[in-house]
Image (tube, rainbow, N blue to C red):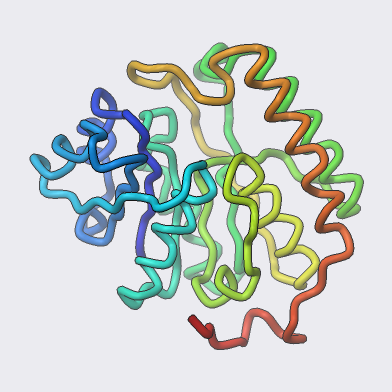
Length: 239
């Protein structure tokens, strides 16, 4: 089991995130930085964490970079979460539980805004609803969220051959997982305000509209995708 945290300039929030990680998980956590100059790296090192520097720009690129490092380290399950404090690390065991108990191959930590209704701006929630609606229509099943907190079996993630290295990473993962016949769990998790900084997507109406447009077209691009092997869940990765 390994955890990947994309953290571009999250030096304010990352100490609290690392402090809340479930026991025994920190040594299997990869914090992925946007650049070697990102001050988040020094903060992570001061707290005994390990970092990677992504070679390509984008949220998806950071997730993929961390995932490959986790595979190389022998992880059989890979979890993802944001480094801005909005994802409470204490909910990771709930998200992992369906996978660890053989009930799912992909588990989504669907955000519950009841505790902090304004943690995600209204325009961002509207954009998320639009994209999940399109994705649900294409997959013919209700997708409740496109969350940053999620977990997947490592073998399956590699075989999905994800290509979206920006905002579409999670959408592509969900669509391809469904097309590959993977079992999907949707687990409600609390969501809270970020600590410092501004979201690269939801921080502005313009950014949200641009991301929503890209994300709405993403399910269409992979609507007819099929895995190379008939049984993705049983396949061995070839790196």
